[in-house]
Image 1 (tube, rainbow, N blue to C red):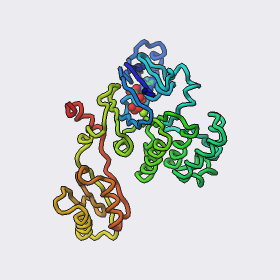
Image 2: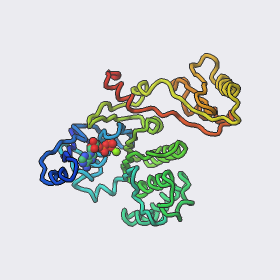
Image 3: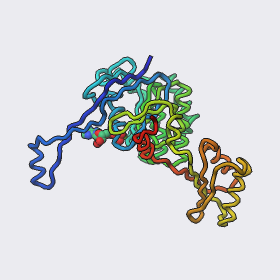
Amino acid sequence: MAIIGVKNLSKHFKVLNRHEGLLGAARDLFSTDYRLVKAVDDISFQIEPGEIVGYIGPNGAGKSTTIKMMTGILKPTEGKIEVNGNVPFKNRQKNAQNMGVIFGQRTQLWWDLPVIESFKLLKEIYRVDQETYDHQMGMFNELADLKALYPQTVRSLSLGQRMLCDITASFLHNPKIVFLDEPTIGLDISIKARIRELIKELNRTHNTTIILTTHDIGDVEALCSRIIIIDQGHILYDGDIKRVNQLFGAYRTLRVQVRPYKGEQTIDQVRQTLVERYGEDRDFTVRSREMGWINITFRQDEMPLLEVLNYAMSRLPIRDVQIVELALEGVIRRIYEGALQ
Ligand SMILES: Nc1ncnc2c1ncn2[C@@H]1O[C@H](COP(=O)(O)OP(=O)(O)O)[C@@H](O)[C@H]1O
Ligand SMILES: [Mg+2]
């Protein structure tokens, strides 16, 4: 039995066509000049308990609008939606007990309170009993090492620290479903990696169903076996991530900064290190396009990104790394061009 069912769901917004200047503003007061934005337009899907589904698409695709309808914040214009056997916008109170939700741009914690006080407030709001609370807090601390942050105010946390707290907080009442809307937006890679680990562990230990929206392909590669791609309110693809992996580009690039940097000699050292691990015939290149930074480009089906990263880190004096991110726009363009047919 599906835990989320969405059928022919749409959300249309009427938006005023604004006019410029003071006179325009006055005209707008009485204007009937509206245009219709079809934020979500006739989408259907089902999600099974325990799945981690990546809901991906470029900015403005309709991801947040879909999440808002599934959480009951917005009422659909048309179509059916059922979450946990309930209609979200009709049973908001009841649904809240079974859901956690994070919007990456905002926090559900209280800015001026110490982190621990936010957790205590959420415990009261969701009527979490002491035993569950102690158990969850113990687990969060083990997974994310949060204790040091508890006495700090939310305001004083870095974006990444705040997100770790926000995510754990959304799991406090042990909900069946957690919606994460852009949980890694604006974060650097090391904290992104921690957040992905945390999400994976929480899903594994509690079998929590997770819907993750993102425009970072790295998030979905790390976490999801199923993805739904949305663009301009329409679903372009729903299925196994493996089938679209080829569209994500066969090649990945890892940038490393090796110290001391001695130009050609250092580049050779990196190349040699990879040859030792992967042999001479593998299809990879090592180049420097920018002083001090070395680009390693390889086929990800032959040389998994994380493996290359870990190996390089263990063998070379690496000071800093960057993973060159793939652009979702390219993937979507190729789907439109018929790459999945
Ligand atoms: N409250 C609203 N009023 C009018 N238009 C909206 C509203 N919310 C979203 N939209 C529009 O709907 C489209 C989808 O937005 P959204 O769901 O936030 O996209 P995403 O989360 O994928 O970036 C965008 O064109 C956005 O401008
Ligand atoms: Mg959004």
